[in-house]
Length: 204
Image 1: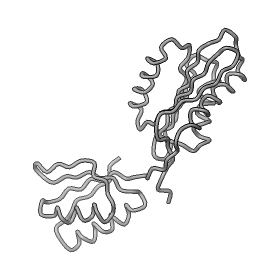
Image 2 (image 1 turned 30 degrees about the vertical axis):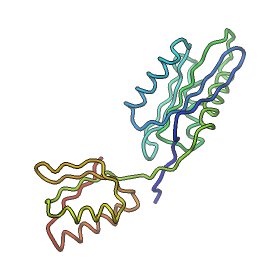
Image 3 (image 1 turned 90 degrees about the horizontal axis):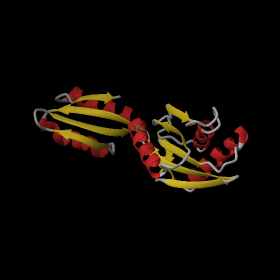
Image 4 (image 1 turned 180 degrees about the vertical axis):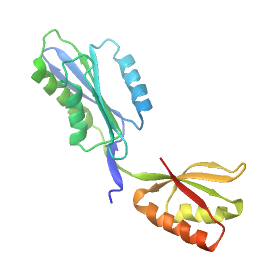
């Protein structure tokens, strides 16, 4: 079972120049479409005087969400080459924006493909690639007297606590590395067979 994915660690930039046009590549780690929109808006504000802000991104622990945008360039001449560079490095949760300042000379579709591909490559090539564990989000519901049992599960299975609510009943949301989840479920079932039930469900 694959229990990790590759992504970028920080924001990085690359540069390419051709016939007076300048292409600035910006690679940014992202985790949601909302964050993509926020980072795009920041780039557009930073480079407000640029002709084009073309981009592509891949999201999700399994790379299930992808998008490429040519932002006014000829179809498939900008977004797809950028997306291809993200895919070639087998990355997800990554956004790459390539900003173009037009130099007065048209490059043609093949020239644009080379330019956007190279700027994206340079931006990603200066970044740090990191491995991140694929996780399941899990919610526990339990009685207060079972707190020690649940905290032992957290320790034994190296769960990451994301939120806790002990107001009316004890609710805890955690993240479990996917390769450990089945053993965790088996352990909780065994505990439930021999004591007060701990409610556990996986979240989308």
